[in-house]
Image (cartoon, rainbow, N blue to C red; front, top):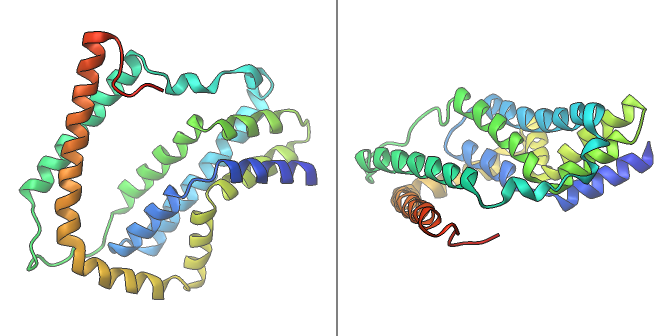
Length: 227
């Protein structure tokens, strides 16, 4: 059991991803309710672990030789995904342009609603499939007939790879996150108008690049950025 815990923890550190914790912290800063952010975190941690447990039990050994990089290779699937992302970015950017903030615009109350947060948790946890250490943990857990070790491997990898999110969730449970959030909220009140404008511009620039990249692929069969 200790060997499985140690190996899962090492793989979790190698696959460390701070994005979940940063997203949760940003949600708190813009006024999301603590229980809603906790729900986001729980979905990310539990669902990521559940993927590992289920796959380890069912196909753990069979995927040992699977080339996980094929999920990221450039092809028509990537082109379709880029077009979809471009459409989403344009839609969000257009909405933000029509609802421009000013210094007199009062901050929104209530922050991000629970539905979008829950959906973000599901989508974000599913991105684990693109992480090679996720696949390695499935293979590791699949080698053990002991169901308890399989559960431990999934839970440890999920908690360690999302260490920032895990720490933030513990801090929220004990209420020790509030001073830092209050400081960030005061800073956000000062810069939110500029950030709103910059992020809107960034969304439109990203959308333009994705469209050009897809068009280049259609014309030449190659993407501008190769992987």
